[in-house]
Image (cartoon, rainbow, N blue to C red):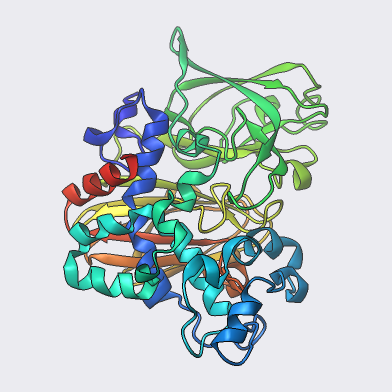
Length: 450
Ligand SMILES: [Cu+2]
């Protein structure tokens, strides 16, 4: 298995497999520039007067004083249990005029908080955008962000870099197997852990494979013999199901009291099967799953067909969840979500996987998605093009995006209470950032690592 070719965000020539944490930074840096445009052009809440109306106070001075006391979205939200964790921090932490400069006339606390989210998202990447997008576009971005205020986040790393779980990139990179003859052997632990959805929020009591949410990607080639050992470090029992696999032996299916006894605390349990089914699959708990999957026991299982018929330049695994921690993409809520980046004329493959309990319609601005596979199975002549793709719980969809138009493009769930609230954007928001040249990617990375 060539790990160099499997980084989800970067072309092979940029990946040093020995530097996965640095790889995370690279991945994060890639798309960092994009959020400016999200705040501006794509998802700016211009008339949030319905369910999540801004905390309106007349006049700039009043808005300024209200900013620090804006009520958490949970208090007014029908999805309160899920919204609160992602929505609260922008107002609670730093959306104050003292931290961000004067409040423009006509703004409410909502505007202050919404801008704060984008400021946190871009962090100290902002200066690097000048060389990427050119002076004219950069000037617009700087004006929109209020860069002249010299706000504190201009000197801080972007939110998605600050999340302590720097395992995120590791999670998106495949786990390296050991070889036992011609069998690929993966060893994982099942752990209780503290997990930060967003660096400004207190950690949640989560569960993870190898201490990660999502767990590390397990990736093999169609036809491989696969053995996966799970050591249960929890104080409760569990079971692991490989979702989408066509098993020869139903006792490998991972369902306690149907195909096996539960895996007890301290026990190491082995699953073994041939990866007959190619495509985007998953693995997750299938025991007390409402709680265990909702708390993070989930991961991607990718089986590459041999040969791979689909050509693409970059790849991204996109696992959604909507229970503990609110609305998340790969275990984090916006602005702590790593963007998707591509250079112009590249093709990006996204593997949507829904590990939550509700459907999420993923909507890409500015370009379309070519849907090529459902639940790992190629659609062939039934492939279709769309800009909004509903992904139900348990489903996986593979899409190709031709990054033909440079810019920053919002890419988000279109159930609006999952993405925008009183405190600005949160949760299931991401961006596709198309830069003019591959070299621009390196420029952002260099700025981020500096
Ligand atoms: Cu959604």
